[in-house]
Amino acid sequence: MLIEAFTEAKDPSAPHTNEDRLVILPGRAYAVIDGVTDRLGTRYDGMLSGQYAAVTVQRALEHMLSAPDNPEDPIAIVRALTATIASAYEAHGMAEKVQSDWNLRISAALALVLVRHETVDVILVGDSGVRINGDHILRVEKDLDLITSILRREAWPVIGRKVSDPEKQEQVSRRVTWHGTRQPLDAVADTLDAGDMDFIENRAIAANLEALPHVQRADIENLVRGGIVNAQGGYQNNASLQLGYPCLDGFEVPQHMIEIQRLPRSEVRTVEIYSDGYFKPGDAFGVAAWEKAFAEAERDDPAKVLLYPSPKGSTASLWADDRTYLGVRF
Image (cartoon, rainbow, N blue to C red; front, top):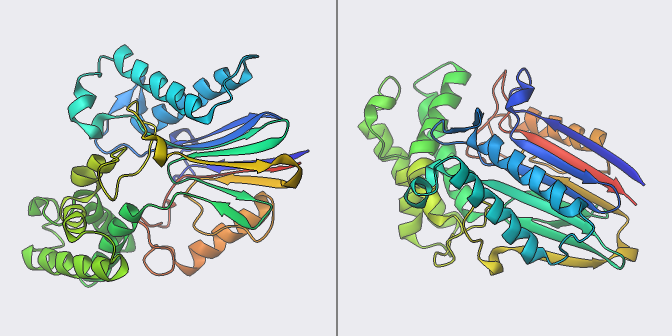
């Protein structure tokens, strides 16, 4: 067996801020956990909520799956992790506040691979991915993320006509994506005016309607106008909405949103698990191949507005996101 792993924070100079975590239990379980970036600066035990979520899930998984009587049912594992986060709210006196304010919740995406006697089980909650045998990718795609990515793409050239500093352009574009086109204008008044915001909103809605004809206009308008902070949380673990998406946040994850794949162990040669900081998969197994692909994506589209649409891009000092890779060759 060969195991290769790599993780780096979006700020390489501050590795302690990394919101990704790894679980490596050789011959038993492997996971990448991606803490959802905090929206309001909420801290738990001195950590921002995304990092605290990832650490909480990591510790719970390691404890649970190391036990002799570890659960084998994927749904039971997800429910146990949900209960662990719910207990964390209780411990921090946040149980009532998080009921009504989704921005205070601690959230994480999970990509988990369990090695059984006869099978390899893949469990996905969120948008981290798993590649099997170098060519079969399992990942839950979120139309919701594409909507906010297109919003940022449409805002990018408008901002670029107003500022010459690439870092300022990235900062303002994230602000638009984060808070939407109907945010108070004083937050962006040094760069954008009401006419700019109206133009960005109209372009973003039209572009999303073209790219996602199956998505209701009301949902597109809601996300464009409200952005991630004001609109996205209402879709989290919400099975009643078309754009509902799964996430570990201490609240029930609808069972049909949990992606479970069971593969014959004899047919699985390699497993690669990765967080969404990788915008392009490696052309071979291993950290070197995935880092090469990462460097290519950064070279070809550092702002993430052309080839790899994203709600955030890279700058000279910061990557767009934390990234983590875990590869296992059996």
